[in-house]
Length: 351
Ligand code: AMP
Ligand code: TRP
Image (cartoon, rainbow, N blue to C red; front, top):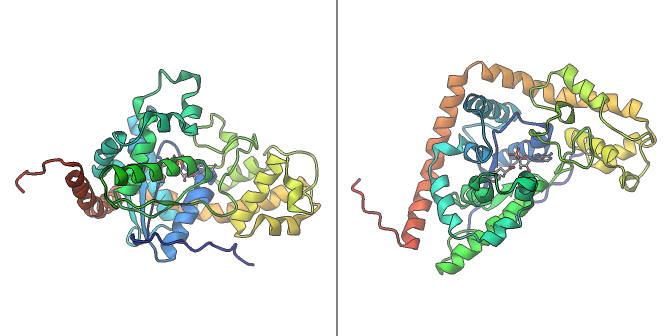
């Protein structure tokens, strides 16, 4: 069985390759997070690239989070990362609020980014909806904190799902404007890494909406905490049309639900969607869904089991995050001190 071809990363001329990415602990991890982000994070780590991964708790509070749940979800997300294959000795794994350079650089970037840039962000428009007068100022400024996350490490490559593309373009704009305003070649212009068969996993109830931890319907998503039975049931009940699978990938056009299930199968199996279609041409969903359910259970159950085991020792998870934060701080602090120097701040506290 062949793996889909991975595009080698393009090197940014003067900056060494470093990967940064983040996930919000604003709910449990979903299959969308796993296939669109986490699985890629593990691959990059295993390719031997320097990888920094962050649970962005400061981003999570842009919408209200219950403190008890937030702490639990942050630990659970950390357990999910480790269970999925992130090795905290090879990657740096930490939660954002423990490294204050993010918030400090985020403020500086609030003064670089323009109101007009922020107003064009589709994620803000979607989240704010008709309620834009009543959402937090933090939700509006969200992308400049995200740029700070990345640029505090001078990261060159950022693996994310499709929905983050616009935020990464804004990160590039911030880096370019900072470099131009201060006449320096300080920040790299980052490359989004959006690859694989499942860069946008859709809801199981609606093939035109993204699978999301914030969807009110639990049936719309697979959570990394779901047990085998729940995963199977959700896949068997997933919305589809009545037609059999086509014999060519083009036949999935205008069939969003069918396309989504094929993409999920492909990403879980490490195949291309075309290979899946070749194997299941003409199959009814009555055949395809149980095969997909079995595959999903086989791939996800070991992760869930390991996550549950790790969650029995929250103090150990906190220790791992703290140790990661110390390593992250050692990278980000000197960058931030250089930024303060570039922009003309006095730094004269006795050490
Ligand atoms: P979030 O849960 O919004 O913090 O997203 C964390 C990471 O998971 C980002 O890289 C997202 O692009 C990715 N992601 C979230 N939902 C999906 C989805 N439905 N399909 C693919 N990637 C996703
Ligand atoms: N905005 C991202 C999301 O919701 C999470 C995130 C925050 C992130 N900071 C980041 C992703 C830096 C990549 C790099 O999915």
